[in-house]
Amino acid sequence: QVQLVESGGGLVQAGGSLRLSCAASGSTGRINFMAWYRQAPGKQREMVASITTGGSTNYADSVKGRFTISRDNAKNTAYLQMNSLKPDDTAVYYCHTSGAYSYWGRGTQVTVSS
Image (cartoon, rainbow, N blue to C red; front, side, top):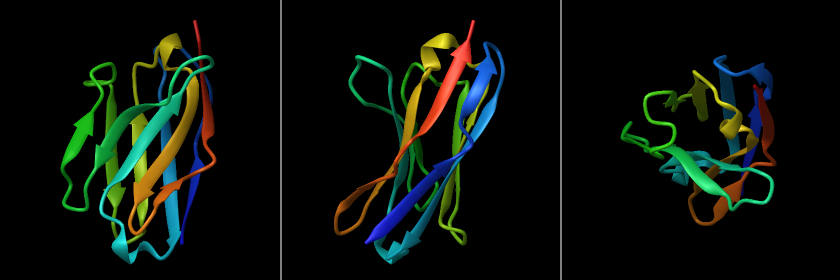
C-alpha cells in the first residue's frame, strides 16, 4: 500500500503563486511516476502534470509555462509549483501514482480569486 498526502493548497489572487506538495509513504519502492490531477466543480478530473522517476515531465496544455512539477526521490515527495494562477485553475488538486495498484491522495483545495 502507498499513502499520498497533499498539502499547500489555499486561496490566492489571480496572478499569484502556490506550491503543492505530495508526500508518499508505505510501499514506495515500486512507484514509477507521480502526477497531479485536478477536478473543478461539475467537471471531470483532468491530468495537470506528471513526472517519472527519471525526471521526464508532461503537462496539460492549459498549464504549460505556468506550472512546474518536480520530485525529490529520496523524500518520495512530488511538488507542483503554480505561477500566474488564473480563476480557471480553481479546483481540488489530487496526487496520483501507481505501482502494484493505483493510488490517490485526498486532495487539496486551490481557489483563485479574480
